[in-house]
Image: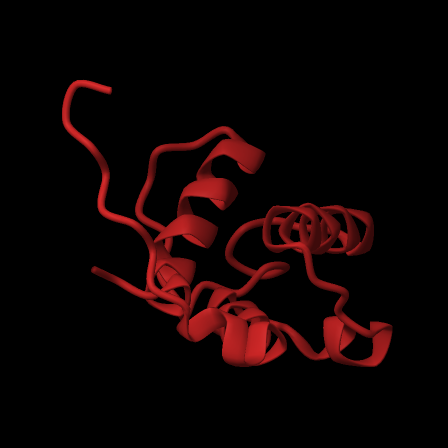
Length: 95
């Protein structure tokens, strides 16, 4: 079984691809503004989507500091705290 925190990087990258409507390679080093073309509103909106996805609340002062995809991944994992170490159930076949 895998832990919630282990799924965060891939999940956030998939969410980003859907958010900006691309299937290109997004790296943890990709910068929101310079590489992905985000403006301030895009950054706020995507962070809010991430908060909803993980049922967390990220304080504004930390949200502003997330300049790269990796920064946001770390922020989400840190905000999840111990709950992020919870094991995910294995998918069931045919159900």
